[in-house]
Image 1 (tube, rainbow, N blue to C red):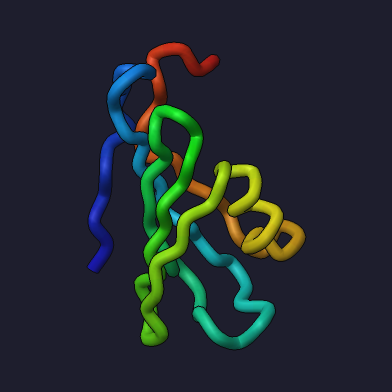
Image 2: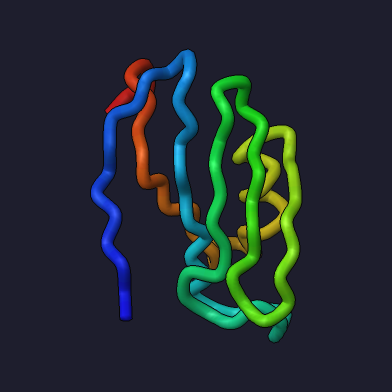
Length: 90
């Protein structure tokens, strides 16, 4: 079962931006493929992310760019934004 979330426009100064971590290829053999994690980006850029798979954990990062560097595995994982901040280019 897949839950669809429409992209929403959010206020840049107060609202959180939701995202999913979509793994296309499980390079490490730990997290599997598909939507393996979800999280939010706070207005100051800080990120909180929770793993969805068997080994659950929650982590905090300084930025979404840090998440991409740490978990992107050279394109094997894609960050899917569910919201767009009002001041972000579209």
